[in-house]
Length: 437
Image 1: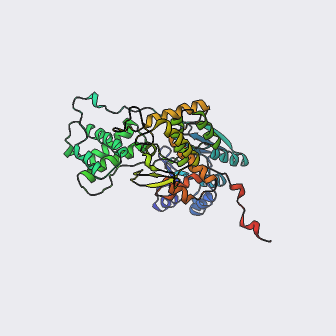
Image 2 (image 1 turned 60 degrees about the vertical axis):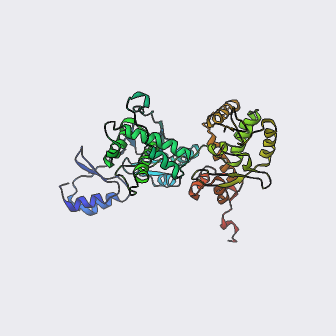
Image 3 (image 1 turned 120 degrees about the vertical axis):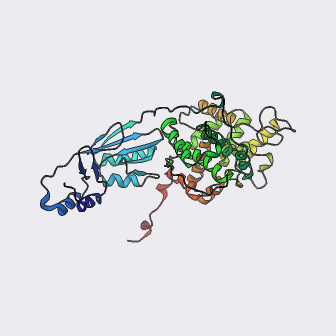
């Protein structure tokens, strides 16, 4: 059409319309009502109407999807990318899935990867006579490796003021362990620049470097920016500010959860009393790995059947439940091992110098148990915590109690477990069924 501000404004107002620079034409999706809108607006000026039966999608290895097809791509970030045309019933189904996102730029939906969600999409597609095409995204190209201190003669270490401020503001050891090397990577990216001369321009340049050259994950990029912001805002005392850097949203994925039967197999496969006690405490109380290694003996309150967690994530204290079976197991373990201060202690621990058990050792225990139990799915120590919460929910425990036991500040964090399980839905009775109609 000839260039006309009124016409351009009208076309832009149609959802998902776009300008095709290559063909030098405006493209409007063939959604219900759009053709009628065009005819009503342009009237006699229309000389020809053509419909493209193909849907041009965004950046993907399969750029064209037929009108009766649904392309599903499993991404490297454990999500499913869905590409299809305007199919209202399918769109309605996708919107019911937790953490479903519409990417307006690439014109596709993404949802967390789950066999359950995949089956739901397949059922709708089968009902609508749609062809499902399933692909797995190829592994992304690896970026350049992080600069090591041994690779440069003038490596700049994190300034003492930075480390001291982390301690002064009571940041956790895990946060300090993450922030310090990230900040060092930032200052060493500019070897000829003095620390005092670094500013917003350098932050943006470094962020782009992480994405384009290092090809880091979105969570790594976000944490790197947070580590840099800590220096400018907390150490230098500057005002809190937003840097003009595109900070990516972390893609939400549903956590892996073991079934009750799988937990049974894992714990039954462990014969070492200490190892069994460690995994049992984590699962039975929903603990993080950092919380179990920081448990002193006095945290076990057998009188009230509680475990007292101190200085957990976010410097919060909480109580969680102590299982009767775990208490019996701990008593047997305690008589045999006789720990001095920490509930679980490592090699060389003495009364004068008690040594905490290491996270790596716990991870190794679980890895061996999984192999012995014949469980192939990707299970981590944190999976035991997710399984604890899910199994409580399936047993009818109120979400508010689960939130308290897990130490979540935001109830929405706990609500994720409602999307993992469907057990119990068949027992819910519609209020209509109780009416005499």
